[in-house]
Image (cartoon, rainbow, N blue to C red; front, side, top):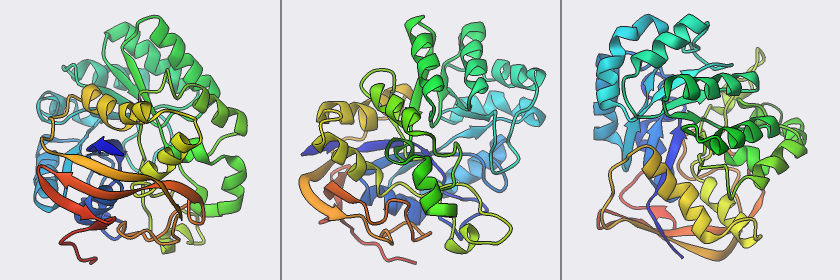
Length: 345
């Protein structure tokens, strides 16, 4: 099976400030191994990407160190409204955290939210971490301001149904789901302990089923929400930071869903390549494609090859479909599932 270069619109590459978990080099290697040739990385770094100067330094570092294309989100902050006019000219999108987040970027209060929304003077997406009632706030922003609102990692039945109704009304909204919300639920959270803790948390089987019911209609993208933490961090007595890695597991999981008849190969291409590139207005990558063996069966390893954190919540899961080759701008970068010219740090 030949696929275009895939796009993951929601990853945490931990640079700057969290390089012990991941960095641009290791994260982009994991991306290529998973069939992704373009990444959009989140701004809740240390420091967060809330000013143009900080964003520019980080984007320059990403350009120098990454093995695939990496574009960095701008982070919304009520204390940096004056930066939005520059950020919206350069960053592919704005990220607003309305609910629980690991970091300082949560936007609180209607005045702050209105200021950020009005300050983003661009048709580029405003991406929301919005759970439960906050999804209704996002729909209201789309209706009031006419801005393109993109909902990240939708995980609950009520949320996806509300977004579906907003789309039926013609509002400018799009959304993504993460593979861990498609393939795991609250029972897995109990089994995995801290290794199954993420935001949004894993939901009920009925919530999980609702996401699959909308996979061929309401949902625009599947995005990994790759959020690695070290084992030491996940096992610390005072509590684990939320987040799980996903760059190397997303495509095999979705290929498994294709083999099960849950979606078509054409729909997989829309969710992982065509829609993300269109929604975020990303440049095309000439002479770029991904070859996969859709019949290859394997058990996902305890330790993925490239992500620095070295574990996966999907370890031990039997999957069907794996990446064999990746060509990026005419150059073979993955052969037989191995990233070429790369040495693990």
